[in-house]
Every structure is written in C-alpha cells, then in structure tokens.
Length: 149
Image 1 (tube, rainbow, N blue to C red):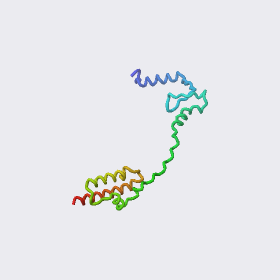
Image 2 (spheres, rainbow, N blue to C red):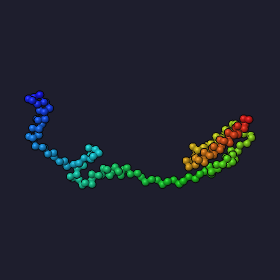
Image 3 (cartoon, rainbow, N blue to C red):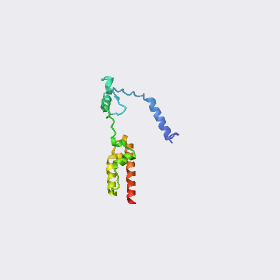
Image 4 (spheres, one colour):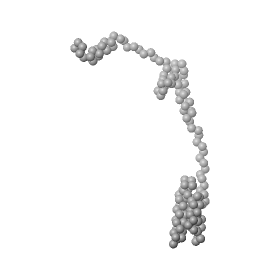
C-alpha cells in the first residue's frame, strides 16, 4: 500500500491523470486499402480507378473457368451375345456333351468368362452378363457333378 492506496489503485489514478493531460492523437488517414484476404496486397485507390482493385481477382477467376464440357459420347450398343440370357441360349453356346472332361469343362468356363464376366463389360450391360455367368456356372457345375457319378 502506498499512501493509503494499493498498487493497483495508484496505477489507475496515474493513467487517468495522463489521459486528462494529453489530447487524443489523430491517426493519419492512409491513401491505400488492404485486401481482406491478404495484407500483402495493397491497392492505391487515390491514384487508380476503383475498378482496378478487382483486376487480380478477375484474372484469377478467368484462369479458373473450366473449358466447355466435351460432348457426351454416343450411348454404347449392347453386344448381341449379352442379349441372350436364357438357360437354353447359354447351354447352346457352351455346347456341353458327354465327351467333355473336367478339364474341358474348366476351359469352357474360363473362355465363357473372358467374354461374359460382369467386370469385363460396360456398366449398363452388367445385369445381362451376370445372368449369363450364373447360367453358365450352373450348367458347368451340373455337368461336373454328373461326371463324378
């Protein structure tokens, strides 16, 4: 305590006295403005026309404009063999007979899958490819079971 006042009270009193003695200083007005995004971009608005302040932004936006989209490719035509999804159609293509062995049936499965597997065709045709592969696997598995008997 200093002379009946705490240190805090004496500091507050001194600051009040100083504020009364000094008139508030007026800050000089700047002839430029800063961009709100970056303090490093300064534009002199007193010497340039106001529209020039947007030139960097306009240039950047022009750079970002995407080129016009390429025309869409024509829709794909479904291969004719993918339209044949019945069990009879797939059986005819596989041509399974009593002379087939387990090895020949495995080769037929692989060669059929090369052309018809859903991962090997375009997305719009995958349902048909799945039906064809399901039918082929069913027929080949049945033929293998008959050979085992």
